[in-house]
Length: 161
Image (cartoon, rainbow, N blue to C red; front, side, top):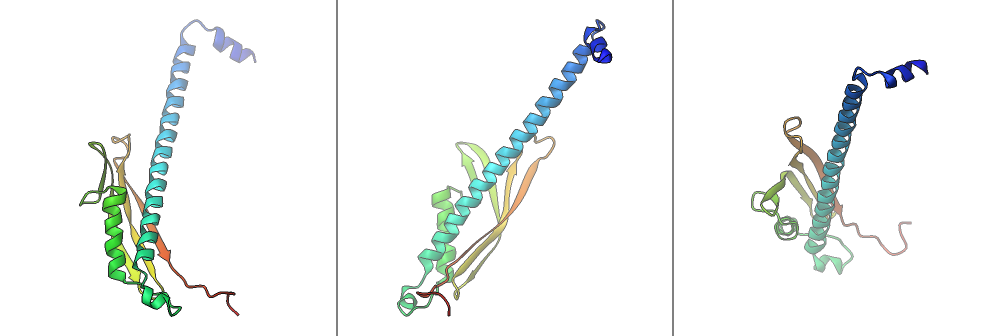
């Protein structure tokens, strides 16, 4: 206890330097946490939008003539077309899959693959979300992988035996 009292009563200015270092450390950690939360929020927002787009594409591409007979089938090409239509119109991406807020670039989608099957109706979108950190001098571009899938399975009334 005596040591702490000596530090606080020291008149050489050591405590001022200690406080400056402590404030710098606290501000740096706070900024890193805020940036992490911003990027996490952006990732969740984009993943949610992609999940909606994939689900809507599968639902739109289901073939009604098979549905009548109790089968679930879809037109894979139509599902792909509807997914791209959703990316451009609903999410607001440009032709190169870039998202802008006003004139400022926000993120870019790098689509690695779109896997579609007719029976069972399934659409899987794989790729990476590319964005920039506020700390460009430290992190530069950040790539976050995503895989979004939607499956439409026919469930018979009463369940399986």
